[in-house]
Image 1 (cartoon, helix red, strand yellow):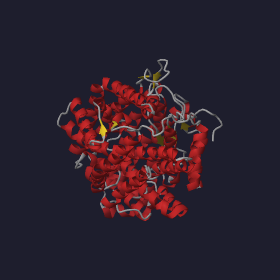
Image 2 (tube, helix red, strand yellow):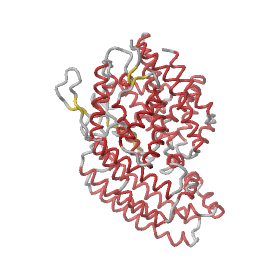
Image 3 (cartoon, rainbow, N blue to C red):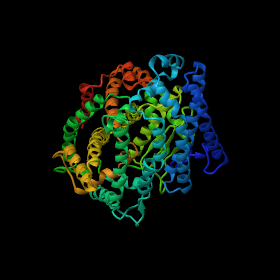
Image 4 (cartoon, one colour):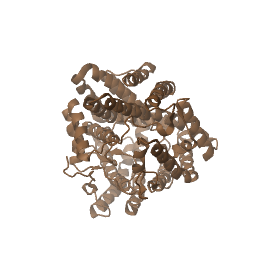
Length: 589
């Protein structure tokens, strides 16, 4: 644990320094690797590649990908640290072009491997046992692959197309500042989005309302531009994946990447679409009553039960609480979480132009992951810290699987993070000294359950609709109306909506960055509730089973990883079981 009393700031010089000789040297090495890799082409295409030579080819392929990930990882972290850093933006542009060249240099191998007959591929698969799953996953994309020339064009066009649009969205929204005039005692300071976000959980109704109005006022002022960026990204997604690659639906692209059958995801969303309004509708009604309101407004959704502001928790104290919660479950889990801070891979301070939100970036399997958040000393920040450190633990436990298999696919990627939050919630409940304090924690658990299960599932349902609407030429206003209707279905008559929330969708980075990512949150949270129920029944003997799930990383299909741990099948009964755990928490209020 660091000795400073202020939130820590990471040390990116442990990777590179912008403009340094080491950075340019590795960029030159990557360029040379990309230029030399095609020397394998004759061997590959003539069918004269021995098994030992295939192993050497994969070693070169691995080296190229590791260096590419390290370089782009550094550039991305530098940009996230300061979205107005011109040197970081310039580096990202250079690397995007260089990485496109590198991807193109390996296309012949990827396409050959996908198209190889099963009988011809089998000897290679037998020799590369540890990489078996990754190699089989590559072959699973055969129906959606294009010619080498077409793949090259797509790689090049993405640099100035989809990738540039996402960077533009981040640059525009990352520079937003918000008025603090609504804050009691304000002296006219400008707020970042992270600073503004803390006020939507204020105990003061007028502050919550004003914070939301300010947030969506600023976003709506750029609604036409942000909507155009989104529509261009959606069209690019559809043109490439539906028209060219022949995926059955826009979401199927993500399902394939997650190695999940479309039917599993459809079942998840269908259960959420019916169970979430019912279960959370009951919660919202009970919350309104306890807050002395006839009905919640959307401004009140995250209102705390306690009438006072959260007590400020210094970073060291907060990290200590997270560690205490983790160590009671597994000392190994706690040790790996603390390594992030000890290694100076954690930035939690509040900086102007810093990317909003929080993330954990695993760059290379042998390295400690990097975590970004903005720590303001509130209880919510402790849960964010536990969440992101959970991600970091997950990557470290699975590092032995190498660069292609250590990171879990999205549905399992939220397992450690959300379980970490549950451990912290349990610790808070244990420390609660009176019924009001306990109820306040239960409010937080249920608020988080809503935000992670229901909200994300309805985000996913909106994305499905939005992609179809854009294909039919929907305007910015029509997308706003569709999102507002989505909110109305989500809340029914339990929560009163106002018009500005129709613009919420343009403030959700995942819609722009990673289409159809969001259902992974609902998947992960409901899965964790199932695992939590097992933990409550089995106690400490469950920890090894849980760590086994994490240690598998992305080395097997998600359904197999869970089945080996005695979890599943992922059917309607399973997902409804997750909602039952939410109802159990609700019954304790």
